Length: 495
Ligand SMILES: Cc1cc2nc3c(=O)[nH]c(=O)nc-3n(C[C@H](O)[C@H](O)[C@H](O)COP(=O)(O)OP(=O)(O)OC[C@H]3O[C@@H](n4cnc5c(N)ncnc54)[C@H](O)[C@@H]3O)c2cc1C
Image (cartoon, rainbow, N blue to C red; front, side):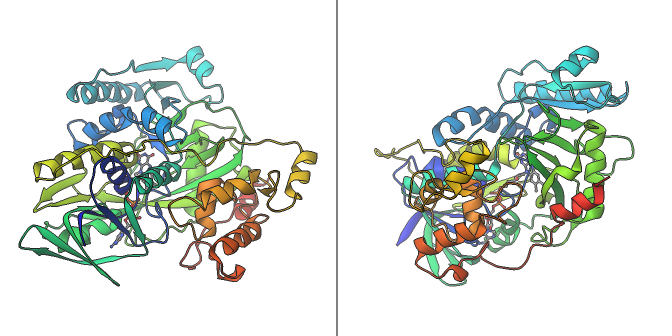
C-alpha cells in the first residue's frame, strides 16, 4: 500500500508528529531502527522544559521553545505523564554575573514578544530571598536569575506516552526497521527502503535524530554539518540529600569552554537528585559510555551550586549525545513532499510539540489534506499511577505475595506492583526488553538498579512473549554499556 505519511525515527520529535497527525484520517507509518521507541537522544537527557530566557534570540529554537513549552500542561494532563513547573534559578557567583542575568532576562522578554506571547516576571533574587527559595544553595552563590517558566518531566515517559497514544489512534509503528535508502518517484511518491523491506508514501518526515543527516542527504537535501557532543550525569538515591526546590543552572564562568548553563542540579520528577551534564565532542553518536574523569568534573561543578551534595548516594551514571548543528540552530526544511528535521539538539524536547505543529503546516502547504478522525482519543492512562512508600514489614509481605495476585510487588527499591508491569507490556507498543519495562514502570530504577527485580521482570516478559527466560535481553543489542558503576563512585568519594 501507499501510506499518506512515513515518519522515520520514533523519538520525541517523531512521536509528537505522529500523535498530532493521528487526529486526522490519514494512514501513517513510523519506521524505527531500535527495538523500542525513545532509545536515542530522547532517552538520555536532562528532561527540562526550558525557559525561553536561556535560548538565543531570533532563532528557530527560541520560537519553538516558547510555543513548545506552553503546550506541556495540556499534554501532561491528556497523556498522563508528570510535568512539574518548578521554575529555574541561574546561579551567580559574583556581582559581574548579574550583567549576564540581565541579558537572559532581555532574551526571555524578546523571545516571548517575538512569538506574540506575554513573558513571565523574570527577576534577580539575592540574600534572604534567595536562601528562602533555595535553602541549600552554596554560600558562595551571591544572586540568581529566577525564571518561573522552567519545568521538568521524565523525557522517555513523555515519549512513550506520545507513541502509545499515536498507536492507539491508528499510527502503525514498525520497530527494528533501519531506513537505508530513499527514492523519489515522479508522481510525488517516495519509496523508503529499510535493510529488509520497501515502503511507499506520499509524504515523508525525517525525524531520525543522529540518523537525519544521512537520510536528508539521500533525499536530496544539502549536507547538514552536525557534531556529536556527549553529556554525562549522575543520579543519586531517591528522596535523599539536601532540599532542592528549583532547577539550578549556573552563569557560565570565565574560561569555561562550553558556554552552556554550567552543571545543572535538580531533582527528577520522582525525587532523585540529578547532576550534569558536561560537554565532550566525539565522533560516535552511539558512544554513551561514562568515565570517572568527566564525572569528577560534573561532581565538582554541582558542588559549586549545592555544597551538601553527597556523591556517595549515587545509584547510577549515564550519558546522552547531542546532535549539535554547526549553524547553532535547528534545521527544518521541506521540499518535494519531504520534511527534513536535522540538528534537533537541546531544547528539542521542549520544542517537540511546536516542531510537530510546524510539520503539520508544512504538510498542508505541500498539499496534504486533513480530515478530522471521528474516533480520535486524545487521552491515555498513565502507567505509574501511584508511587508507593510501604514500611518494611508490609513491603516484605507484598514482595513475597503469590504471582498473579493484586498485592504482589516485583521491584523492591521502587515498590513496583506486578500488575503495573503487566499493564505496561500489554499496551499497543510491543515491549520486549528489560530496559523497556524499566523505562515504563520504574522496575530497576532504584538503588540496586535491577539486581533484585531483573530476573523477576525477565520471567514476566518471557511468559508474555512465550520464550525462555534466557532469550529475554536487557536492551535488544547486548553490547555491554561501558558505564562507571555506582559502586565505583562510592569508592571514589567515601571518606
Ligand atoms: C545531554 C543532553 C541533554 C539534553 N537536555 C535537554 C533538556 O533538558 N531539554 C530539552 O528540551 N532538550 C534536551 N536535550 C535535547 C533533546 O534530548 C533532543 O532534542 C530530543 O530528544 C531529540 O529528539 P529526536 O526525536 O529528534 O531524536 P532521537 O530521540 O534521537 O530519535 C531519533 C530516532 O530515530 C531513530 N533512527 C535513527 N536513524 C534511523 C534510521 N536510519 N532508520 C530508522 N530509525 C532511525 C533512532 O533510533 C531514534 O529512535 C538534551 C540532549 C542531550 C544529549
